[in-house]
Length: 395
Image 1: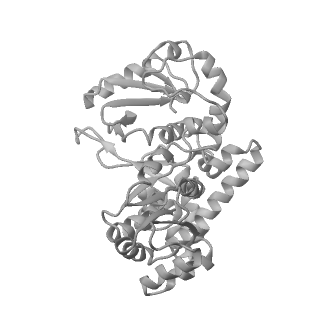
Image 2: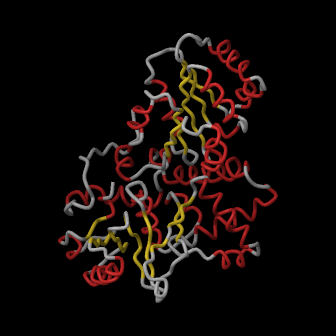
Image 3: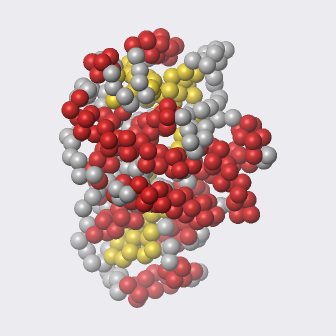
């Protein structure tokens, strides 16, 4: 059985009273994790309910929450005098569910296991109703280590900051890393070897995201503008966000652009990275950079330069390992990623010693002494220098 890195944390939380909430973009494996979690419950006093099915939503339309509990007991043959494990998939389909969960949580012996595809819904509705009663876990697309596991490649755990470059390992992994760069980490995409099937799955994920997840939050008469906006945004990954330029390109308001980008981020499609600044007179202090959360989606949406594509991939690999910012002078000189505010990374397809020198000098402005170049294509310099990291070693 293929498991995710997050699963051990979910198992540990299974023993607590708090509701376990798994969120993340569509098709990242939330339902699989939920069912696996429920399978690890030794008690038979448990049930799985999928709210994507309209028929399963009817039970939660009852205004009397005690009656909802009684119906659950009858429909699923549950025992009231034992702890009940209630797994509910895709909670965003029932708008009043937070209130129901809160009431049942407070009044009955129920352990809730919940999934949802929108952090917007969970943050704005669940936060107030379930304050102190829940823990939220985000399930992202596969990182490269998980990708290799799904490809039946077993490697020992390692620290990418301490790894030495291994030519043998590079030769073993370079084709797989090229696939990861091109098609990303959605589990279904990774598990098929057929290129056309990969593209079909990615297009289906994008269509479902627009027609189901986004449709819940916007007036869908605006659908064409939303798709155009996603295309424009995707073409500008790794660049500084310019809301005015995007608005002018699409002939829509700057406020509309900002609102949609916030929605895309809260539904796990993209991430904005903030800038670090110590000297406002010389440095960019407000502009954010933007990255898509999966390279597969990026590649079906936009034909971006190979350097931007690689930088976007490195973002997806680093995002779960620590806090990310970037740094930029007004002259244009820039540090691609500042990691946990004390390590700087420059991302280059092929790099040389001058790149590392420039990075080190620029990092002095932030009092950072740990500087690394992350590269795609190894050469003699990068393979022999401990301050150079091959992208495939970040896993």
